[in-house]
Amino acid sequence: MSDEARYITTPIYYVNDRPHIGHVYTTTLCDVYARAMRMQNFDVFFLTGTDEHGVKVEQSAIAKGVTPQALADENSAEFRSIMGSFDLTNDDFIRTTDEAHTKQVQRFVEKLLESGDVYLGTFEGWYDEGQEEYHTETNAKELDYKSPVSGKPLVRATEQNYYFKLSKYQQALEELYQSNPDFVRPESRRNEMLGRLREGLQDVPISRTNFTWGIEMPGDEAHVIYVWIDALFNYITALGLGDHECEWYKHRNHYWPAAYHIVGKEILWFHSIIWPAVLMALNIPLPKCVYAHSFWISEGRKMSKSLGNFIDLEKIESYVNQYGSDAWRYYLVTQGPLGATDADFAAEKFHDIYNAHLVNTIGNCTSRVTAMIQKYFDGELQGEFNGDDRYELGGVDWPTRCADAVNRWKEALDNFELVKAVNAPMDLIRDVDLFINDTAPFKLAKDETKHGELGAILYQCLETLRIATLLLKPLLPEKMNEFHQAIGLTDDARVEMRLLDWGGLNTGTTIEKVALYPRVELTATT
Ligand code: MSP
Image (cartoon, rainbow, N blue to C red; front, side):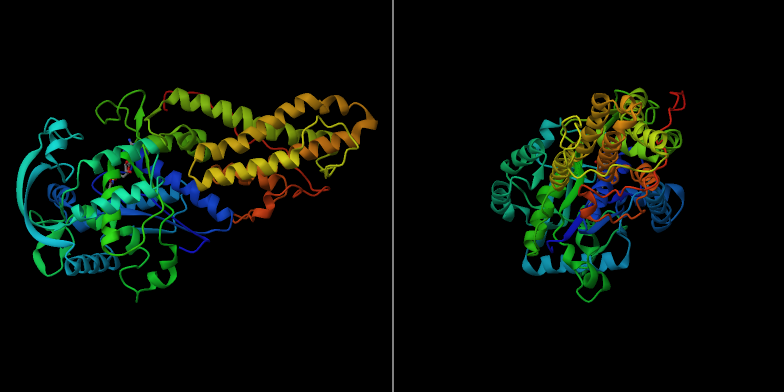
């Protein structure tokens, strides 16, 4: 990875399911990070895509009377289309049925066969048919021999399979966890993985013979490569690391290692134990951090189609239509399960957050300040303020306050602390509101001799809002852009960092009055 590169990935989504809040959530988190990094002129690569092989896809296709490829094409297209409809700015969309991916996976597996990290052997274990996942004896016992996901009994299965020598990497993984405590985050999830690691690692089967919808095992057509191994490789096949002749490699290899793999908590094992071991076996550097978020529940209960609380695409669209795409992103990112606990999606809470944060904080403050500039100065910005002390201005050193907020925002984003990154500009906006109350521009406006002071106050308010709204732009691209146009900033997604320095607004600029977030009725549709 060059110092300037930032590679961020979502899991690739199974095409046997339709997109829902879980998928949109993970992708939105990555989108905010990607936009914020682009804004700082990092060289960003943001990858998402679809996971298309495996027995579940094969079975659904048979049930529907179509080929697995046709089913994968249809559902993958639906996942791809959500990227456009929710302002998600991924740089590529990988499909595990892409030839460039399958060829590289076979090459990687070939290398693992050559090095002896993959071998043919017989396996017996507790298998979760729905999840296509084996459990160790200890783990199966803890689960009462039932699938933690479907509740169906685990079955005792015996197979001749190709194995990956995971046990060989026990010590190296322990060292990795010790020497790099940030490899898995948040910390509670890291501890869970450490616990499982300490139980001892066993070799894992990485091929299947009971179906054919998958990438063929090199040199043995009776086997297909296990869907999880196939899928994990997407993070490096998309950069062409398995084929140095390909175009992808030329333009993308510098993005590796990834800055962040963002995943849900239930797939952390694959990402934080199996994946680094596979990479070690291939002598490929490891990602910097695997970050596992928790789950959305809905109206206080686990999401389920039968309970009617499932947040599917139609439901998401109804929120976006009613409140706007920014409001949807805001709720997801600031109220979502980014930490170790699950988060509740509730219509009333959504409405309250919209009102409190978007209407009453950002909306109100931007409208208040622009309305005053309209009213008192005919919309012309006055009173450029460079820290001179001709006036008593409420005692706030805004240039320093803003610089601190920018630093807080940058640091939080680097650490993927997205809520902190949002709070930095939100605090600035709240402080502008207090400043207006303290300095009472409406009183100064009544006194001709105080107009210099009035202009300087409003300049500081608007300049602080300019900086705060730039910091909010990765999260609220649509409305912040609208605001920036109203205050005479150009619509440039690649905002250079110097725009975050104090003094970007010029006096004499025409400022339009804005009303960014309209009030919305809480209705039964949401
Ligand atoms: N195909 C695998 C990932 C392979 S990555 C090499 C997979 N796909 S998935 O479509 O089932 O899930 C994708 C993501 O959606 C996971 O990160 C999962 O945690 C997330 N979510 C699914 N339901 C969710 C919620 N209810 N809430 C939040 N995210 C959840 O797993």
